[in-house]
Image 1 (tube, rainbow over the protein chains, first blue to last red):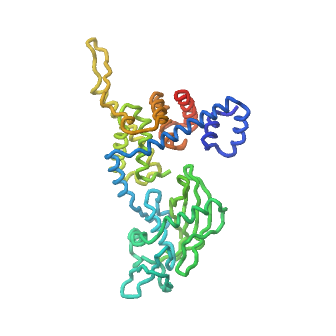
Image 2: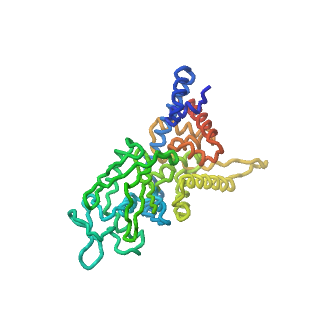
Image 3: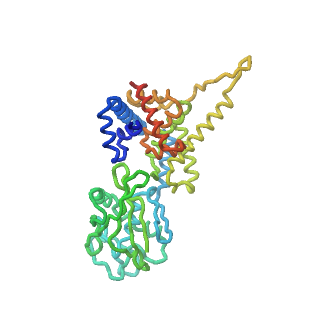
Length: 251
Length: 162
């Protein structure tokens, strides 16, 4: 006898795949189960529509004010904790995430129209250039004028130059078709014009979300003092689109 | 799942609030109270793995507080000492504040006429929550109970909107 909650899950598309065949056959064989299946399909659709319609309503003024407050709370949150997972990125703006991401590229990267090189003048500041240049050999990490500069400041300096949307767009179209250990490129290039490569390390589930761990194919030098860090990204599918949920660093 | 705190987060709380208030108070006020709580305790909760559950539990607490408060002031007795239930005519109904399609209005009205547990779980389901999230918010011990409750409530809903 099939549990009717399985029929409901099947109708909702949440039943584990291994149970599909059994439930499908039971529904086909029993008109009562077929009716039950239709009931769950119908109520599922009704509840989905109801939720969407309520959410499509404009918020009253007092709640709209809260939205504005939340925007200020969602500024990038940067944490550095003994070179382990240092971002809780679900709650921060993509640009903040992108900024941290941009920090990983050794010797500079070329993203959209931004290329930076070390100012050869008196200062140590990074300059945005209009065309690609060869990075000086002693430039290990752009936007990091001094080793003792805190991470948050470095992120703030960098994130306006990084196109997070482009990066997400690049990987969204590729991730689903990849197997473990497959190597892939995004449109990101290092300062030598070499495409930055990534490897799909792991598929995993996080609170029901389809997630993937993606690693850079070689250790990255994150600061002039860094001997090389392994960097990986956790990317989870949220509302049919992948989003970076955390960036992990390890020595 | 960690929620992104934005307008959609607040709107999802409105849907859930509808399942909590059961037409007895203004769901927007409940959401507003929960958001004020989260914002004033942001250091404590901003990194919480399930901040929506925190918000929903706060809304439930606020609703119960409101009921108690109302009972304190609205309970009266007649000449013979019998309790009189005083209906607060000013109570808000979200139906007056939003415009839903006829179909959704019918569904929402049907849900309002169902039991407390069904109202709650059906609105959680309409918000798109997973079974695990529903279990956490409804504080039901087993996932099986959540599944069977939702299943029964959906069958009842089907009977009401048919």
